[in-house]
Length: 156
Image 1 (cartoon, rainbow, N blue to C red):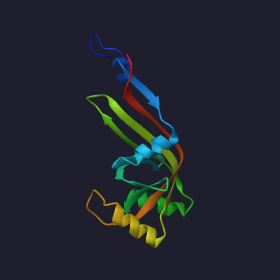
Image 2: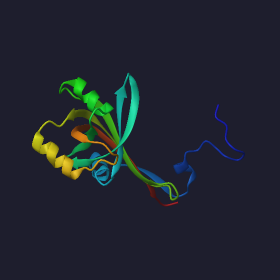
Image 3: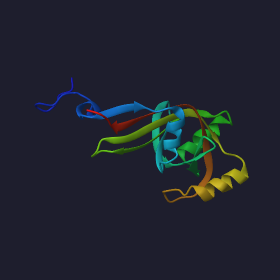
Image 4: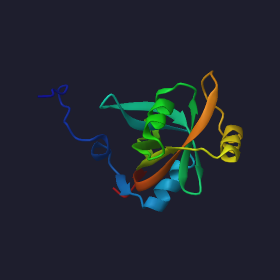
């Protein structure tokens, strides 16, 4: 049983803030917002357990593209799939904790290695890694399911 400080309740933050509305987003709008974020999190399976890694990304014709580093877990994971792809989730958000406003999007689909040299070269130019090391390739996530919500101010 979870305890709460005196006078506190288990109500969700959105429910406890007067005038806040939780709005479901269409898949198109959610994907468009995801494209505005600079950083997201890729969720995949490692040793039969969920693993999460923050990465930068870009949207290309509705696909989510992330770079991988030599020998990284993500690169090793894709190498074992032999082109079949692996199911992943990708999440990005922009939420102001002070105002309690913003949005969150989750895209689920198959991730495959980008193998075309021209595409890899293009993504290398467009996506700079945030950490030191040599980025050797890219992953394409084709979203099959895109969901999202927005926390916005509404009528009291």
